[in-house]
Length: 472
Ligand SMILES: Cc1cc2nc3c(=O)[nH]c(=O)nc-3n(C[C@H](O)[C@H](O)[C@H](O)COP(=O)(O)OP(=O)(O)OC[C@H]3O[C@@H](n4cnc5c(N)ncnc54)[C@H](O)[C@@H]3O)c2cc1C
Image 1 (cartoon, rainbow, N blue to C red):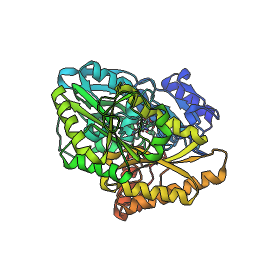
Image 2: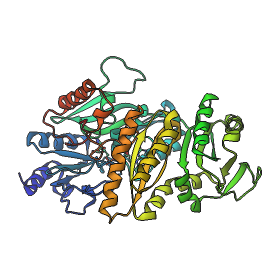
Image 3: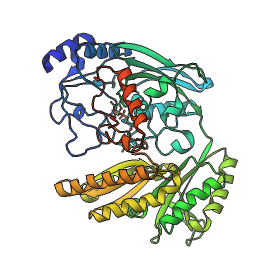
Image 4: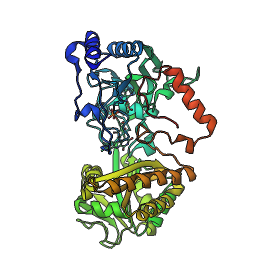
């Protein structure tokens, strides 16, 4: 069936005005990864207005053997929402209803197309917290967060998206709506199908609504930026904080290269410890800094004050200078601004989100720098130190094919290093197209086989986001 016929048929389900073409260059053919060659070509983009319409679209595609790629906000970084040839993109942008919010019971049910920022905002307005905070929250959607099991800085204390999901409404092949989980706070009755859907990147079904279990928002937060002289000291400080029994809500890092690239835009801070002396305003990242930690502490006012004292004590000689931002939001904006700032240095970057056991973070950073230097590329890393989760990056000239080739080789070698160290090729951004076929390196053959069998059970025709999240 050609594109025109597909569009006409789908128009009968959702209304002709909600089925559009996706010519080359259309945003629906890409995601936020911006990687070389990662642009697809959809036969049609369909924008259902209800869960029932989503199920009907899936049913039609299944009956006519048309591949279906679900799209949330398109902020994914691994090509997960990029349409493979001949496929229909099912965009959930019109599923924007918040079906239920019960502040006293700490819960909310929202449709998949509600943006992450709106979920966070609504929770806050009701005295509650939705912990996941991936960096493109204005654009990413709740369904996309579930489909990628997204994290973000606060995942350290509050868990990734899956930890917040009490139930899901999903459209499953060959075209039915199912409710998985519910409002119950525990359930061990069967295999956890809901959890299988979480992080499945649109390869097992389509999430249409999410029941979230929220928590009361902390009364107060404090943010510290701690500077260590070396990577070794910085990574030791992370372990010391844990060994002291501390539970920061955020424990992010910047290596010395990322710090140098971001230093110019560093927001106004006050020194809490270090050469400038406690209380000095206008503190800047020290020139000697070889590693920076961003530590957020939360709780009641008294708990935060006590944690701050303890953190300063533990960081001690390992991080001789510690700052407190004049405005916490400015610090987070600076942190979010690192990505574009680093990209602009040479026009592009190639990044990989990988994760290792937390005690191996320092050695992994060293190994990555060595791999990049051997291929003549400038590297930098930042990420979530408390989880051993690094966004390993090389800076490239996007017009240089040899540099782009070298960058791909760097990432391949990094994945070997990660697998050898007991880590994973995806900490929070998923597998999509970019990292497919590499699970066999870190899993046993039987686990890989089970992974493939699960896909076949949910999607016997292989039409749901084909070619994505493949194990081998
Ligand atoms: C600047 C920036 C910073 C980021 N920071 C973080 C971070 O800190 N932590 C983090 O985890 N991620 C981060 N990301 C990655 C991305 O934002 C998250 O993965 C986000 O959860 C993707 O949501 P989305 O709605 O944009 O999904 P999309 O990009 O549209 O889709 C992602 C995948 O999910 C599938 N999908 C989407 N919606 C559904 C649905 N309703 N049902 C079934 N499948 C679906 C798609 O098919 C695709 O495979 C960042 C991205 C950017 C651009």
